[in-house]
Image (tube, rainbow, N blue to C red; front, side):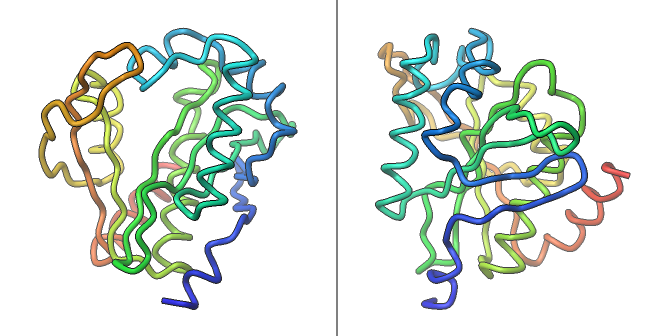
Length: 198
């Protein structure tokens, strides 16, 4: 696993629609410009409502990266270089060849444009083909039906619901639905994703 650990470093993953670049504090202003829409955060652990909130959000992600718990990215529009959202590898357990893709959000203007599909494709390809994981996890709140449908659409398998699994900053309990893709399923999932992008 030492090889995989060595490979789990900040990296740029480039597609044709989007580019995933390592998250940095320098991205806070650009993320705040596109990411303070209340609807983006309604079902998230805590709302991001101000530039200071975004600063804290990015700082927390970078602290998790320093601890080896996550690898965060900004999502950049390949055509014009504009930051349009963020995503990350998280709950990284390379000793078990497993990680999660999550904390993904896109500016409302860039939703349903292929940006999310390509971002997922880039992250999954790097996870399975370079990091050599055998399992990629996704989780979303039961109430987030669009997210659940999107995960099923890309070929992730719904595994079950963890009731009262997480607590939002408001104290609201969150029932979380777990999905996964296994290494043996990746070739078919990849073909489907590439077909959708075409």
